[in-house]
Every structure is written in C-alpha cells, then in structure tokens.
Image (cartoon, rainbow, N blue to C red; front, side):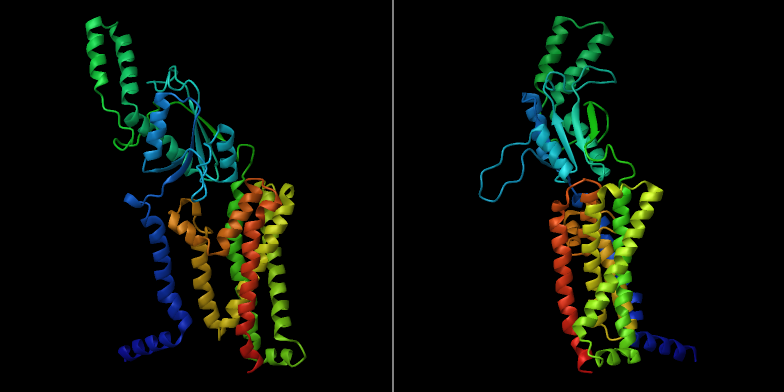
Length: 424
C-alpha cells in the first residue's frame, strides 16, 4: 500500500510540469549559475581587476613599476585607452584622463605615479620620506581599490628589490651608528647583484605599506547612501518581472473561464487586447518602482528629486520591457500553472545573472557578458548612470535602446503566439 502511494505521487509529479520544473530544474539551474560565479573566483579563474596606470615621473624606477603592473596576472592594467583594431595606439592616459575614465565607469580604479616618485619610492615605517602614489577609485566597486592597493605593495617588493634593499640599509646604518667605507662597499656590491623581477610574480600579497597611497573616491565622495539606488534598481526589477508575469497571467485565467472569447467577439482585436494589458502592466510596474524610490528618498536619503529626468526615462523603458516580457510568458504558456513555473525559473535565473542578487562587477568576466542578456543588467546599469555617476539623460541611450528594442521584439513574438486564441 505504501509503495502504491509513493508511485502515485511520482506519477502526479510527472504530469505536473510546473512542479517538476520547480523541484528539479530550478535548483540545478541556480546551482550552475552560482557555481560559475563563485567557482571561477579561485585559482586561475580569479577575475582580474581593471586599473589605469599613469606615469608622471618617467624615471627608471617608475618605468619598472609600470612594467610590473602591466604583467601582474591579478590586474588588467592599461596605460592608454583601447584602440580600434588595426588603428594606431592612442596616446597614454593623463591624470585628468584617467580620472575622467574612472568617473565614466571605464575602470574601477586608477594609479597615478607622481613626479619625484623615483627619488623616494619606498620606505619602512610611518612618517618616512616618500612620494605617495595616488589611487583614484569608484566606490560603487568597493573591492577593486582594496585589491589594487594590496597588489601594488606586492609588486613593489618583487619589482623594486634594489630600492627595498637600499632603504633597509639606510635604516640599518641609522640604527647601528654608521658603516665603515669597506662595509658600505661590500653591501653595495651585494645589492648590485640583486635580480630585478619586472614581472612581479613572486611573493605573497601583503599590505605592508612600503609605498604610500593617497586614496580618493572620484565618484561617490560627495554622495550619501548612493548605493541605495543600486539595490533599489536590482531588487525592483526582479519584483517587476514577477508582477508583469502575474499581470500577463490574467490572459490565461480569461481564456480558461471563457471571458477571453467574449472579449474578442466584442470587436476587440487581439493586438488591442495585448497592447491594453501591456499598458496596464507597464503603468503598474512604473508605480511600483516610483514607490520604491520614493521610500528610498524618504528613509534612506536617496537623491531622487535631483535626478528626476533620468529616473523617469529609465523607469519608463524598464517598465515597458518587463510588461512585454509578461505578455510573452502568458502567450507561450497553455495553463496558469505552467506559466507560473516557467516564469519563476526564468525570472530567478535572469535576476541571478543580471545582478539583482549579486553585483555583476564581482562576477567573472564571462558571467558579466552573459548577464547582458537580461533586463536586470541593462536596467541596473542605467540607474547607476543616473544616481551614481550623475550622467545626463542622453548617456542613457544604450540602456534605453536595448530595453525598448527588446520590449518591442517580445511584444511581436507574444502577438504571434496569441493567434491561437483567435482561432480556438
């Protein structure tokens, strides 16, 4: 009897495709996504940190340091903007150019090696005479500047061993009361034989402070709780997708109850019906996002009212895209249960890949590119431009174009699948 009950349960599960998807496919899909994200962060798969390097000193010491940074496997360092294939290499970054690039989001950090660095590159102990390297960063990526600062100390130890040894000798001479001429000559001879590793590939990463750093946030230094916009966009888009899915599912309820046939027989075309339901879904999504950002402004001091034009544009484009997505899910599903299961799988997968659950800038490069296949990624990037980088509305053109273009394509596909209701 128990065996018969168990077999009957599995037969029912096999017939219920929605429950089958939620029981087996969704866990495997989520495991695969997060394994690809976090599994690629160890060993050789560690994502490299992009950093711009400017050498204002031009000394032999600074050139060796720049060379070591360019060859450091943990960094994606560059001294000039990426040029077009086959074109001449563009001129190198200046301090102002590197700062502008960080503000625009081209890289999360920049290192400016100032004039005079070669004369006093390293020192041991606080308060020593040394020329600090400027580290400019964008605090929307809180991990990058810390990694760059730590890796820089490691590279200095491996790329400038002679400078390290020279400073060590000065400290030793000061503590011992002085060296004889013969002792100094012997030490200098030994130092000349110290190998210089310009690749900076050996030695553990340690924040020993051999190089002084002047750290400055060039994007968020005058902002309060600006990351609230990032979280509001990420969480908001994920729930908008669920809302749009539920709103689109009303079509299936009407089809099952027979109400859809009565609506279509009243001289209402399927195109008009889909457009009307999509407009309702888009307005509902806009209201939800507006409420979320108003709450963020009232409680978490989000700077909403100084960014209203960009907010309105991004909210309209995002709401249109998710509304079309809801119509597509409804039109390709045959039952409400099937639609609920499929939408849960797709929405949670999109949210995981697109940055709603885990910031994309912490993902491996491949996963970041895959995330661009989702609405979440484009919406979050657009809201980041508005609230974090203070960019004008015209700079939202790529994000708005993708969201509206994808929305139009999904609506046309939904209209195609909805033909079955016209002939049923």
